[in-house]
Length: 282
Image (tube, rainbow, N blue to C red; front, side, top):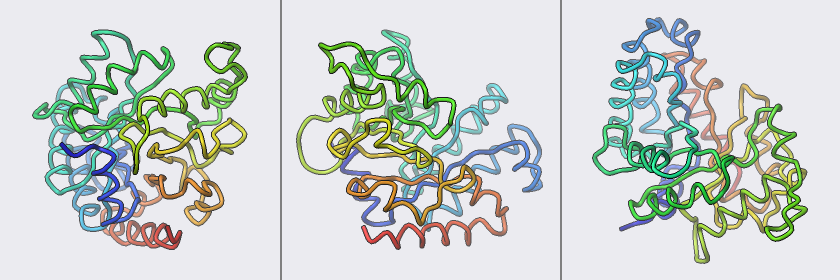
């Protein structure tokens, strides 16, 4: 079975690393002339998939905007996930799940099992019940040829105090920041080898990664999902400056900056963003 890291690397080589978020905010639905309903988020998601499928290799549906409509919203999400995967896109379900034991196993089964109604290629997860709480989920993902993206240094400012705090656990690398400790846990999950690992990290483009302890070494082999470009303030043109030597691992995410172009402008907006990323000369 081909690993998620290998599949992601192949898609990036073929279509580029840009990831398009599928975030049907209520205001965006209105701007697109769609109802604020399960039917609206379904139509929005399928239109974004259609626009993205010929232009990029990765999409990231934000689960919350579907979940708010209950079972009908989840049914809409199932259609969007299936359509994206059928189009050959790598699909990252942005659900940020995090728990322990059988509960986390349930989340993994829902999002990462072949044939599940919510099957995605990768899932965003939270490590704040401890890195070991994700180990079984990571092993499940790897066995299934799936991936995880673990929150390490997110683009929201209120996370900085926690993620830049220093560990006092000397046995586990005391003195490291929380973000660096998360990254080291992921490094151990990926192990040694060539190419991208299957367990990635979320590293926001609006933060100074070195200031939170995310050195090149600690990020080795991890795919880096990078939100924060566009509406949150980071510019795609700054990618090489922000990420330096680990730039080939970066999957830059754009959402509102392209979705805001509307149904008639989204294709051109994706093309423009993809062209900026192509200029990184990876």
